[in-house]
Image (cartoon, rainbow, N blue to C red):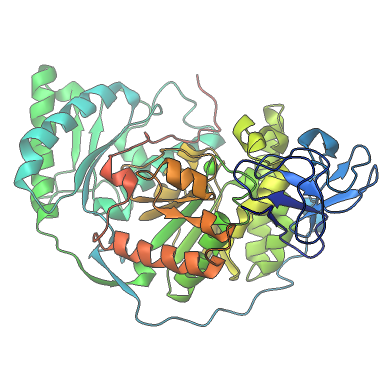
Amino acid sequence: MRPLYVRVHARDNVAIIVNPEGLPAGSAFADGLTLAEFIPQAHKVALEDIGAGDPVIRYGEIIGRATRAIPRGSWVREELLSLPSAPALNQLPRATAVPPALPPIENITFDGYPNPDGTAGTRNILGITTTVQCVAPTVDYAVQRIKAELLPHYPNVDDVVAITHTYGCGVAIQAPGAAVPIRTIRNLALNPNLGESPLIVSLGCEKLQPARLFPQPPGLPVLPNDEPFVVRLQDQHGFQDMIVAILRFAEKRLEELNRRRRVPCPASQLTVGLQCGGSDAFSGVTANPAVGHAADLLVRAGATVLFSEVTEVRDAVHLLTPRAVNEEVALALIHEMAWYDEYLERGSADRSANPTPGNKRGGLANIVEKALGSVAKAGTSPLMGVSAPGERVTTKGLVFAATPASDFICGTLQLAAGMNLHVFTTGEGTPYGLAMAPVIKVSSRTALAERWPDLIDVDAGRIAMGQATIQDIGQEIFHLILEVASGRRKTWAETWKLHNAPALFNPGPVT
Ligand code: CA
């Protein structure tokens, strides 16, 4: 393979090496650039002489300043870059460059399970929610029994999922931060893929009482005879009785779910959550822009697209606030950034705590470079809404659902926001998956897709190799989303039942 690099923007003075084994000193590119030293794949090469203190530019933006002179053809390593300060939140342009609405694509449907509240499931799952961790092993035991003894009799139900977590007691339940985990547990239970009506298992004495989880209105989910869907373990006579009670409720619910059939649903009933994990320097060139193109197609079809991960948006926020559809949405985005700045500060950390050793091995020098690549997932449409962590999203179009960047917490909070399908991009690779929604995994490099052919659903690395365009892969992802949403295709994570446990975001105190 001839020496190849990718430059993203005409202003860039660095590019990334494409060749899988990296390139040795002396390698010459078609334009005459010659490498002064070995540079690994995905790492940056200086396209021109960069003086000490000069800006290093990628994606047309400053990702840092050179800590010493970097001659043309050299490896631009992490330690040669100083971290610029994050964009000041009080000086951001707000709704100043709202993109025109993209032309609609009419009549896109998927075969889903409509819910009474206007949402639809891409899967038909029995969910059992829990108010407190004390009940988790008991619920896990019951779910094993339900899967073995009951589920085979209800062939239209895809799965049974225990929504267990570490919250519910031993916490300052009145503290302002408590609102986040409480609404997350509530909204997880109401995820469209669970048919909007969960079973609830409570211990009895815990702080997070079922009535606090589902306050009036609408209150606790009820059976047709107005009996609430709650099993309280402290009311039962021993463990066997607890299991019998949970199985009895589960069977009633399975009967209802089993009567449902897939019907054509408009694309507006899709809520697709986007996330990246284990990113590398290719993520922002291949997988994330391809997902961004798919996001634009989804928005044009009328769907909701969620992007998240505050610490990976913070350094690119100046590119997003102008795209907000109005002043109010821009201010909401700024509010979520400010809230997170303070949250990190309370923990004596800042956004530079985000990148991992794998990110750096993959060529990402710092959080600025990572963020600029991450926001490519958001495509080009106007930003229509912003939600706080754990809130339910009802806005159509592109929405920023604020979450930490942690893969498990982000996925959990997107499920709470109403996500019924997840798209996950990765460079270094992770076998991540979710129990409550199908996860489509997109690799940023072909080498990863080849190494993990039974985990990666889409290889976006073909873009860097010149074998496909961003638009080609974006179209492929869009069609795969519709196939998976309709139950005609399973993702690899579904095939192997890779279910990362729900992980709550609890910014409140533990007692
Ligand atoms: Ca992530």
